[in-house]
Amino acid sequence: MANDFWKEFGISSPIDDILKKDTYTLEDLLSEDEIVSDTRSHKEKLINFLSQKSTVEKLIQYITVPAPTTADDQIRVRYPAVCCEILGSEVDDIDKTIFQNTELLDKLYGYFDSKDELNNFHTTIVCRAASSLLHSKIKENLAYMKSKKDFLSRFIKHLGNPSVIDFLTKLINLESQPDGEGTLEWIVNERLIPQIVDQFDPKNSSDKHEIACQALIDIIGAITYDSLLMQQLQSDEVLTHLLELTLSTEASSSGLLHGTQVLIGMMNRLSTAADDDEHSMDSENPPKWLATVLRFLPRYKEILLNPPSTKKLPLSFGETTITFGFHRLKIVELFLAILSLGYGPICNELLELDVFHITLDLFFAYPWNNFLHHVVEKMFLYIMNESKPEFRLAVIKKTDLIRRLCEADEKNRAEESKPNGVRRSYMGHLLNLASNIKIIAKDNVDIRKILEEEPKWDEMNKISLAEKERVQSKPLGGVVPEKPSLLDDHHFAAYNTETNAAEDPDSKSDSEDSESSEDQELDLEDDVDLDSETDADDYDIDQAEVLLSKQEIEAVE
Image (tube, rainbow, N blue to C red; front, side, top):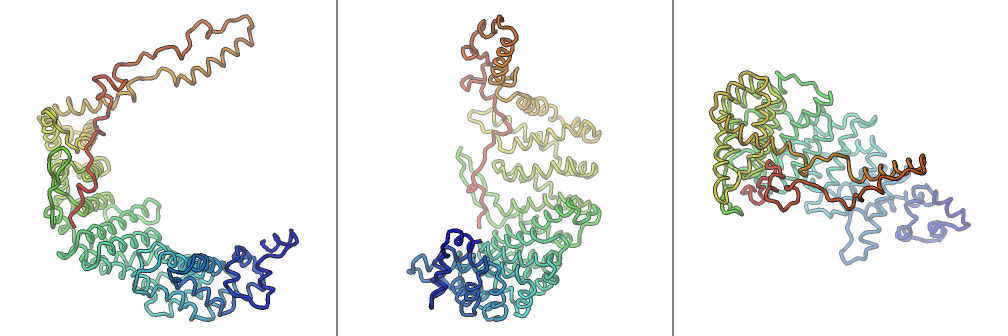
């Protein structure tokens, strides 16, 4: 306790000295380092002063009204920060003053009524003080908030500040507290989720789209899958509105990009809920909200096939490429997220839409886009390893997968054989997929038959896959060590020598008859010295991919 600390040395706290004066101001107290600790120590005279309405009003004034930029740091930074700490000290007398005079709460929350961009520092301390009040007086806070019409609307235009999202998340979590029952029902009635979805309006900036996306993702992560807020987001009304805003002909690529990310977040939350036994999943009966998403899949497919705009981009080694775009990449990620849920009827619908054929076309059409290659590889690996055998076989046949892998491999080898030939960037992903299919075929007659009937498979298997397997089977560094390490060997040799000498003083150490290990040359293979002609064999060819910069694949807004 701060009070006891000063008494031990026979001196009074600087705060005590101020309080003994006939007159003093709040600023006199705020200038002392002990003000916060003494407040939390509940010094009676200090609390009596701090809990006066006029004092509390000034505390709130300091945190909600930024001082002029010409003011010194004491007024601009220290006083507001200390006032925030005092208001957040959960002193009952101060809290009572605030809730008995609701105009003080009006002043605190009125800070968010500003239409202008808020000061980051003051927004942080206002949210911190508000969060403390939220925790200490749940019932009183909720009663005040519910008495104000459209209370939550004031926060929508300030969602870009992390402190605002943090405050809203804490408000949402009040539902789990004894005095917080009914919080989510009120938030649903306040239409917080629909108001955030409205921010995806094509007329809004890309910044607003990104902010709305992050806000929804944060909220999805803070609530249970079966909560009222999640149900509102999943409702046909709200979800349809989101999809229409992000897929309309007027929609920008940023709206499409971030709106699609929200859908992926919802699907990831469903998967997490199933893994944590928070929600039961029936592979043959997908949730109703997914049917809403499926209605818009043809539109997503159309954007993949006919993007709003593209441009040519020169590459560093002389070729040019057409930009794929992050918004289209996000659509492919969406298809992967839908597939990974594992619902049979939905997988079949993706098959009927030719989604897998289209994504495979894109895989080869953009030979330098590793972001795309990675997602498509994951999609097909999921099909090969996680889906039902009949669905896997249907995809292989409908996409003509084996033939296309073999032909792409053949073309790549021909390209690499040319002077200054460049290996296609998708080859590592392609060979990973081919290797996986080769393993599955060992126990699957239907797939093995397809491989046997493909004339180019044997060539691919004996050349490209064999080389891949040879490289991956090589020990790291090119040498298999016979012993754990020279250091360990030396250590144990020295230990054994000392032990033997202790047991037989006349014995001669082996180290005296042998050359020092430091003087011996290491007999290593030729290709480990980084200078030989065969050094290239030491590198994993599957990792030697050409990666584009973000600029080279960025979508055209």
